[in-house]
Length: 543
Image (tube, rainbow, N blue to C red; front, side):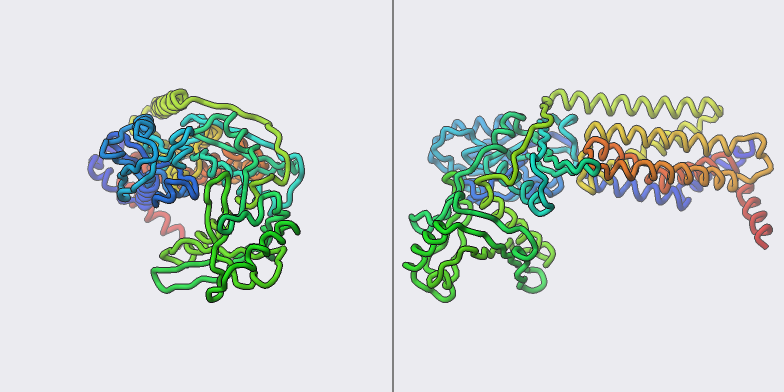
């Protein structure tokens, strides 16, 4: 065959200097950076901190939205090295109650009080830990283990009330120690039904539902006087007219912002609040004492009181909260908004805007999830080998095996990198979508290969053959897109994960991996002289 006139090193040079292959390599590298895969022994990381808890008061912070690989790692408790979550909890249980111990992490050393309590360590400290994640790839509970609870609202809620319900449930679970639990909303575009999906890697489904139903004992306290309770809260406003950004201050490198929202208090609460505030002294623009928000005897936060409350009854007070100092104004706004939503949900925790009905619930053990994950990886790898081998045997070209296998593997890597970057969970539905996307990739590679090797097209240049095959693939891609986009917005969670992964997979394939495979195939099957001649013929045709 003419392609043997080029040496192996020449072909490799041509492949790795091709623009489409360089683009493929770039996206693979970006995918590895996004996944941030860690090697070595697994440690223990902080997986949740309850706001206002002992752990939070000690200065320990947790951002559930951060990359998994950046979770704060626990080194030791009281000087004893920590290697497993079970060891962490058992070691603290052995410590004397009402004593202080040192918790060392990669962020520093914290002095933490071990309170007198009959509760578990995570509940009493407001701190939970988990085994250190090995990458930023977020796995669904089917692959990692955990519980899922799907709830349906009995009443149709407005968008703002639906958002408030989600935030209320999330804060309720955080406050009551169900760390590592995520609450998401889901709307069925066809029936207009509204659902709440709760997933947890640390709590079983029965505990989650019990916490969801639980009504917290909220109190607003000034000094030693309870000025109003959750029963006195008529409404917590969440609409733009009553909840808005008040402003930001600071300079480059240091910003702090504040949000304000309104709360409607009944007449009894208004009277009790006024009777207390009129006895306080005015210091500048504030009163001499703060109001503390307490939930189930846990101090959540404290707010200063404007001087105007000393002189008049206010049944719809405005609460202003500030976020943490941040390096950018956008980050400071996001921090203040999170603080506002948290306080809104605390004030709303006495009751929910609608009753919730359990539609589905199940739990999967972590060992079963790990086994399923390892089996999925093994079976997927074997499938890629078999598919690549069958195509290579069909056309009797060993080089096709390498090209197809590399294209399929890189496609999987890039898709996982995108999922890690977008912080999407990879569950069974997503795996099914990925398999379907890989299936279309195999079909497309067969189209490219078959178009290239067709005997009846010997008079057509290799470049035109590749171009024709890619045109067919683009039409198939648009057809797939037209079918999957409606499913992605159908409002059904399982279909969404499946459809979204197909969309991402085929898009990566059509614009990155399949063009790269086509270029690799052409370089492997032709010589430099042949490709040069084809370019010259194309230039002559254009002229």
